[in-house]
Image 1 (spheres, one colour):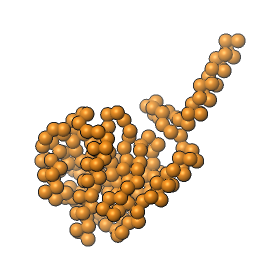
Image 2: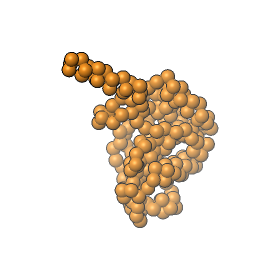
Image 3: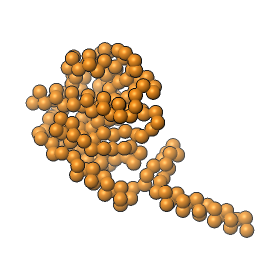
Image 4: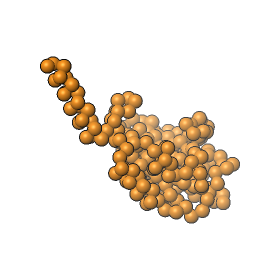
Length: 200
């Protein structure tokens, strides 16, 4: 009798998890499971993206020179930009440590089309992804929803198979809200885009 009761209890827990439509990540945090509805939602997001007006090549571009000095001052960046290794190759990191709250920007270039973050291999259920336009170019805002936001990334489809990424992250804990980080990231992306346009 005890064994049967345990089986019924376990089955009930599994059924509840299935109804909730969630699964556990590697750290045990639940995240939404892919369903036909979420797939349709992602396709709808892709349809909202504007057409790219022209390709802006990233070949030969120094990521550390995408922000003119006047913008570095406005963004409170006083440290010398530094090269670093990112998940998709070299990135340039800008530390905004002129005044509290401290924060930083990480600029990268990824050899992938923007839709890979919506319906392709780079999409993650644990991230909130929102379509937008930056300087007339198709873009996405991507972040992990949390009470204490960790970062916000703006991805801009600058050319076929090329995406410019600008990640803004807090250094001073609790210094920024999620909307603030995303607004700062989008502004930095717009500045970088203007520099790329001026080169072409």
